[in-house]
Length: 278
Ligand code: HXC
Ligand code: NAP
Image 1: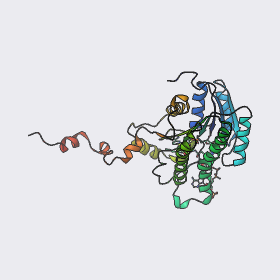
Image 2: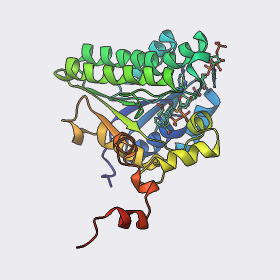
Image 3: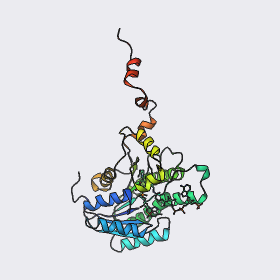
Image 4: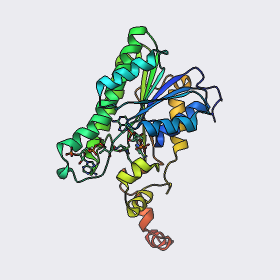
């Protein structure tokens, strides 16, 4: 669906690029001509992914915990020594379901540190470099559909993703006139080992998630990657400060007062409800 050289000459950093959606975006970006950097905490996972994707194009793995500001700065310096990146994808995340009253301070810190502070640190590190060298840049953050409304049982994530969306909208305005664009994608459930093992750890939770979705299926990594390509490409240059939901309509189904009637009312019920012909 895209020109094969769409991202030629683009240098892209994907945090959490060794697995799941990050790996899927890395794959698609490479196929479209980009040079890709991936980071994460686990060196061996990153190296394996880089090796597997290296036939598609230039890919570099850098071990970095985005909670560690000094490590983020060191990673950016190392990348910039070969030239500026053009695109940052804030994709690294931590999450799990838990009853909020049982969360320890360490649990809060862990998720907020990765999702909110990690995205903030990476965005600031790139933004400052872009601004000081008058280089244009694009930031794409991966949020979640519950960010604007909150969600029970994933509260550290909800708090953090809401902050990431506020960061996106705020800096889109503050930095827009200096060639920096920021957008986000809010995906619904997309099967990845990292996410589903932590937020849908039992089969009945997956069934519930499918039932809540008008399309009765999960999203795919390829669908997410295609949207990401569009949003980071120059062709979407006038989209700035937006959060694009990609969830098959799940969010809207949950919001509509009568949207779940179709799951309960059968053909005979609709016939019975209809006014009788006179
Ligand atoms: C309660 C928990 C917990 C759980 C960990 N903790 N898991 N508390 N319930 N299930 C607590 C620990 O006890 C510890 O508290 C603190 O959190 C830090 O845990 P560690 O294991 O020491 O931290 P760390 O090794 O840094 O691991 C971070 C993590 C882990 C977030 C806890 O899950 C992780 O590495 N996640 C990365 C990948 C990921 O989460 N992917 C899913 C993204 S899906 P103490 O008190 O001992 O310090 C997503 C959206 C999904 O974001 C939306 C679907 C629709
Ligand atoms: P995933 O495979 O678990 O990806 C998370 C990645 O983040 C991993 O590669 C992990 O690598 C990295 N990471 C975690 N902590 C890090 C840290 N401190 N520093 C650097 N990297 C770190 O899960 P995913 O499903 O692909 O999630 C990707 C993104 O999509 C996340 O932002 C998530 O919130 C979002 N999302 C996913 C879904 C879904 O259904 N899959 C839905 C909505 C939103 P290491 O463990 O090696 O560090």
